[in-house]
Figure 1 (cartoon, rainbow, N blue to C red):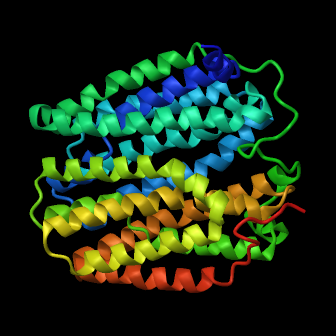
Figure 2 (tube, rainbow, N blue to C red):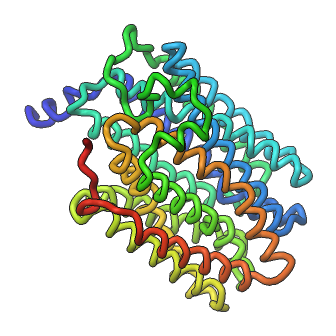
Length: 405
């Protein structure tokens, strides 16, 4: 009992509440997200439109993160951005139920991602504001564990209730846990005085708000800029889970089975996320990313030629593993390569670069799939993946981790 008390003594009220907020939000979101590509096809949209919708959503979230970092620091307020962000995400869930055309789905999906872009960085900063530096890893670990576990549960609920409720009613049902999440934010406390120490989710260089993107790029180390280019190219090749769902449908999966495969993908991602972060510390970021990029080539090449459902299911599993590796390891390597003075700037440029390419890459992948063939689309991703690995070979690291100067 004493050990249990000593383990949890560092956990602040804010950490627990924000963990619950993430829990209920992801429970809500994962009842909706795997349905969006399938819902779009039910409205008559092709792969091009699916790529545009998912690409626009990811671009919106990535590009807004940099502004929320800056604004929450400038106004010394976190809670209002967290509340508005989660509010945006929640109110859009039932709106999908009234969507009759793909442009309506696009608008609602972008608005939902506006919420994510506004909330994520201030939320992480709130955790840091109320947690001692030596316990922040554990604090973020609790928050991410609650997030990931209930994301899987949300996808399971989608699988269970979709055959009963259908698209529209399930979108309405997903609104309920989102409301609980937003109400819980009211109990979060704003820090009376923000920590003087800047966290990685904050803008760390005082000159940053006055600098243009071109000026940012000039001050960053050349090696880091090369890796950001590599990451952006990989984001261009990375077609995401939406096109895996479409692939499953093209080889005979029903909507219900496609959702089941999404549950499998997200479950594998959640299971491997923490071990991947630990492994990146032990064997080095670069070695682990080599593995992830290689797995991506296997998936892209395999999906170009596979024609039976069991093999597609295998690629859902592999994609979950590589996504778990890339999701945290790329960001960690950006921080390693930035050194102690430019972490915030580097992460800002990284997220901006990923955001810029998400929409055009989603559109082009879908266009190739619709106008030529799915095989051509996946083979093009494979070719870009080869270029990524060639360029990645020129990124210099020291045993996978660069020591700050």
